[in-house]
Image (cartoon, rainbow, N blue to C red; front, side, top):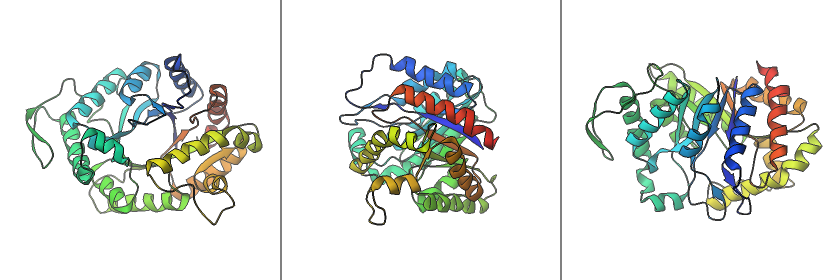
Length: 331
């Protein structure tokens, strides 16, 4: 199993942006030095009181510091974009990293973002499907003609093309069975995100089942998990609980799903920490992660260990402990 670090580019409105560029580089080099296989950056826009850095700029900013790690966009919300531009971005990043770029794509779920970009949400699946096809072809063909419902191209090429042969891999993030199966047909791999353990297991089964119906390779599977590692589980929970719960309250307010409400648990924290988080001592996180590996046979786990309001020293400590004390158990 490979391990990626999701660089967090969302900050509380009270957070000073002074030095943030250096902080992102510091986290990238720390992840590189303690054994991570990738760093990734996500995308959101117009996030109200939160401050959210543009993913394209951050990817370019840290590209020269990844060393032998992969650099991944996790995820580009493709329906918002012209796929020609994303193909050019991916090719550029692949060149800058000497062939170590991975493109992750997804639909997005915030109605406000669709409204701001003038995209009808009903068109999102079609824009995603056409967009992935166009990107693949621009990365591998000298010139592309395309006549789709959402995009039309006539004799279009991009230069330079990616360094990877035949092209960078494309991962898809998805949240329900139909979108997971669509992803299995159009992309190379599946990346699950903020869903409970049992749903993550079912989504991976759906992806593998759909891939088995095609002539394609089986494809890879991965998960994003909120993760925090400290010397003891009590210390980990005490340090990360408030910032992490704040993040999930944002998810609910953004309309992703009502992730923090459930009458079967004593508190939202109990529910989320059991179903979606890897928070604890190195030994406890290893034990929890072994359950994922035994059940799902993951190819990649992407951890997010910083949340709005987190102290950077705590974040560095968690990255270091995960790299030095957790990753070796799975290599």
